[in-house]
Image 1 (tube, rainbow, N blue to C red):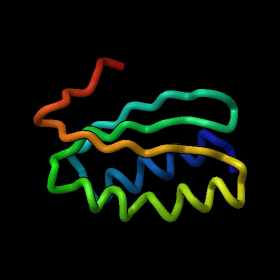
Image 2: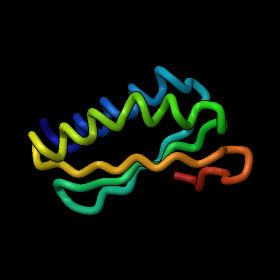
Image 3: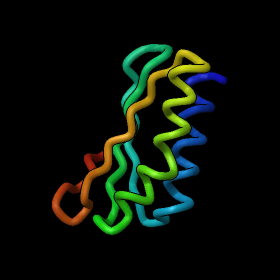
Image 4: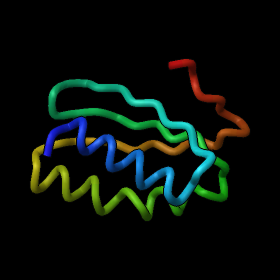
Length: 81
């Protein structure tokens, strides 16, 4: 799996559990990225549940490190893309 495919899958999982979430991606290298999810506070645990196991699998099986950071959208507005 490529980093772009992994990012797309994580964003899909986030959107599935938190349709109003806004995501921003920062690529650090060809194997590393961070995804910031700005979502309602009530969706934080659902986002973590939907992504934690997958990101751990990416790291151990694919050598890809993708961090998912969740922010409360009511207190932290997403930056412009």
